[in-house]
Amino acid sequence: MVGELEFEKPVVELKKKITELKEFTSDSNMDLTDEISKLETRLQKLENEIYSHLKPWDRVQIARHPERPTTLDYIERIFTNFFECHGDRYYGDDAAIVGGIAKYHGLPVTVIGHQRGKDTKENIRRNFGMPHPEGYRKALRLMKQAEKFGRPIICFIDTKGAYPGKAAEERGQSEAIAKNIFEMAGLTVPVICIVIGEGGSGGALALGVGNQIHMLENSTYSVISPEGAAALLWKDAGLAKKAAESMKITAPDLKELGVVDEIIPEVRGGAHKDVAEQAASIDTVLLQSLKELRKLNKDELVQQRYQKYKKIGQFTIAEEEFIGVQ
Amino acid sequence: MLKDFFVKKKKYASIPSEQARQDVPEGIMSKCPNCKKIMYTKELMKNDKICMNCDYHYQMTAYERIDSLLDEGSFIELDKEMVSENPLDFPDYLGKLKKDQDKTGINEAVVTGEGTIEGNRIVLAIMDSSFRMGSMGSVVGEKITRAVEKAMELKVPFLIFTASGGARMQEGVLSLMQMAKTSSALKLFSDQGGLIVSVMTHPTTGGVSASFASLGDFNFAEPGALIGFAGRRIIEQTIREELPEDFQTAEFLLKHGQLDAVIHRQDLKDTLANIVDIHMNGGAVNW
Image 1: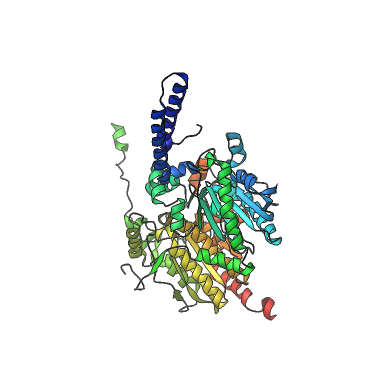
Image 2: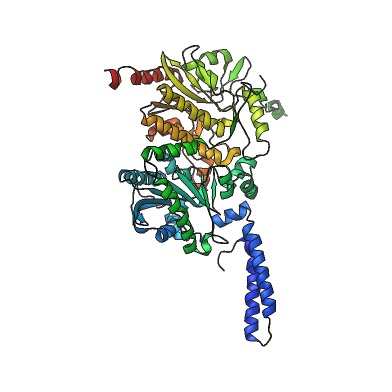
């Protein structure tokens, strides 16, 4: 098995043992069927135990799995007639964000998403899915085009975050992200965002202001990477695991915090184990979501989106004007 | 030996006291963090907290800013009583907030309200970096959003002064979502023809620079202010090269087309009053 993760080691080892026994049975006269079936029962139990009790750090590992399906993997399986558009019309074409027009069950839509690479060469070309300002501006151009033609917009979120580079700052990284958030808030077409891997900070949010936000079960969405949080809070990036737990970054956490609408169940062990099946379960949620949103008119879409974000956050009103020591 | 005559007396390094390390100490004298010149605190305060020697702009508290800009007695504060909770159950978060409340005399990192500037009514939000580095959590996001809604209701311009280290880590993704909340409010306000003016003061970074700080119809900054999304150290580590000295300063942003102007603090009131005035009287409506 390729790319197994730390926490699945017991499963992998048991599987290996079963295979070995099976081989042994077929090669010799000894009948080990009983043993094998016992082990298989144990395997099932073990798999259930491990995969249904994933810890936040385990999910981070799954979300970062090198073979985890990317935006283009899902576009290929969920949409038809996809045509990719390039360039922001100001500066360049950022390969860390892909986008274009397509049909979804016959309905014209615009699809945009962060795009990671699957190998080193592609990752370098796509800057590991970390966009520059021209990426956000391309995305915004495509969103405005979608609005003009009344096409719903589907955004796949999958980035560690905005690229912390000199050129990115010079070309107005802050402004580009801010402008996307601002303009997405006013779009008069349905916008559905799906976090499929890592949802990292402003780079994620720049494609993330939707009428509905869904998350794959093992994806994460956070204001900062666990490593970054650990470095900032405790001056030790090695405490990333602890940060992953205290920052509440998993899909169930975000659902509880009222940020996410639906958790899309994943194939056992992670989306990379069966891309086709994963695409099918995304399709089910997306279809339902789009059907609901298509009932809203332009004003209602903008209002619904505003109210959704207006509700996010926790605060309280103190009884006194000032609660500190004067 | 002759050499002994030239032995220097041993010098001891002086460690500045906690008070001396503050931006403007309570004491009679202040030392400029930039040029190290020592001057009378009283004179410095009279000079809008600008160093008389090198023009360094000290950070201002929210109330100092209000005093320096608005017509006297015109300020009415909004949502003063709003305080944070601990949504992620982050260890010692509430304790840290309490400490800063005691230190700064404000409940949270932004003060919002309405007032007049040269007679024209406005709504404004002023971030205060002395409170948890001006970081943005749920309260900052909500107060700014409500202030924008107030401006929408009153149909008056919205001014924002930013000073922030970015999102507040202890509120995790809820902090991130405040970028969306505030920006969405600004979008609705903008679509109704509302005027947005942003003044970025030192420092304006991270999630704040990547949301409302950059969304003004006019984006200004104070001289020398640090403004940027990613931290300098992180960028240097990522690209493995040293960055220019002026990187991410107000002047750097102006050069790269990100700002309308860098405005000296002593010209700020007149500039803002003028911009508000241009959008209030005459203009396209009554001309």
